[in-house]
Length: 165
Image (cartoon, rainbow, N blue to C red):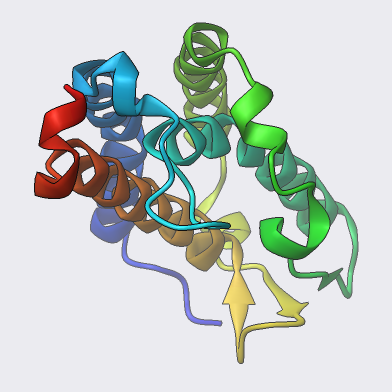
């Protein structure tokens, strides 16, 4: 893979830094009465979307170390709907999860800032994607934060739940 542009790497790092700064205050806006309310069976609540974010960070750091240390890494997809019990995230303490999200994201960023341009371009085979690299993995996480922030806001703004506020 061609080395990613240093400016693109900086953009990804900035977005990763911004993730908790967006998600934590956003989930705090959600009234307790609807925080764990699911829009439909099996569809995550705002609480679950928020608690999922810190849950995947250790997985990403493990993947990073694997990619950096193995000459031919093969990444197995993680699919929460298939890999975790349906109600697992409902049982997570939100305050602790958000503190962990912020703390572990800072540690992630400290580690990522030390990567060389060559390390950012290391590739891996991924069971779900046509191509994959360290850069793609962390761009994916930056986008993943935004996806879940959007879902949290959808729950917050749901007109059908206005009576529960």
